[in-house]
Length: 132
Image 1: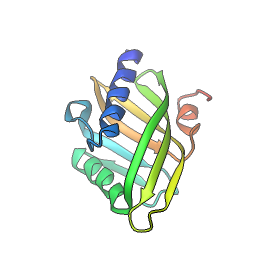
Image 2: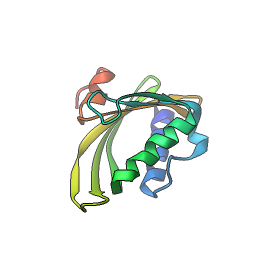
Image 3: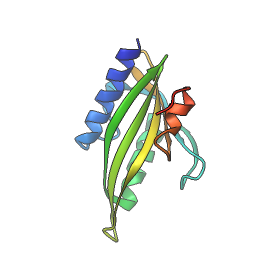
């Protein structure tokens, strides 16, 4: 099951690489939870596909581009920790930023039912008991 969950996570990020947001409906649970960490502009949990879609769309209000390149996928049970390198360009100022972050995807029945992201690249790995 772990490899199947990694395949779901890979397919999800591949669609984002093609600017297909919020992602393929066949991979997203209708009650998906989107979790912003403490310290995010809008921290907290949003529940349901419409809320997930709104959160992803809100990202582009301030950013003209936001590209994510997964560097690592590590599965533990029904969760997949993903280490991501990102580059982005601000919509108004044109300032470009780059960095690394991580996400923890929970998969059930071949669908992502929880998407939680973290500021640091190692945080998702730690959340499932792994180290980078």
